[in-house]
Length: 108
Image (cartoon, rainbow, N blue to C red; front, side, top):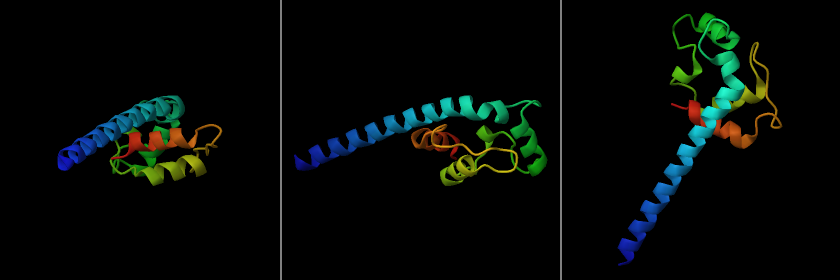
């Protein structure tokens, strides 16, 4: 009986964690669309995408949503400190919670 209850609790915990992760990823997509897409979406008029095309010269995808190497800590560091022509973003602009969600969205 105790094992059955423990199994149910573990299953419930995993379900809740999965739901929270799905919500984080969805929120991350929203954050990306609002803050990042104006520069990093597809198209020649997107300065972030153009800059990454030049930088990577086809070795990596220029579109952030196609990358498989954007670890959460890297994404958070770049957003907070900026790099090259990309400005940094303060916590008053992108909250820590929204940055966590964005990093989860872009993570491999």
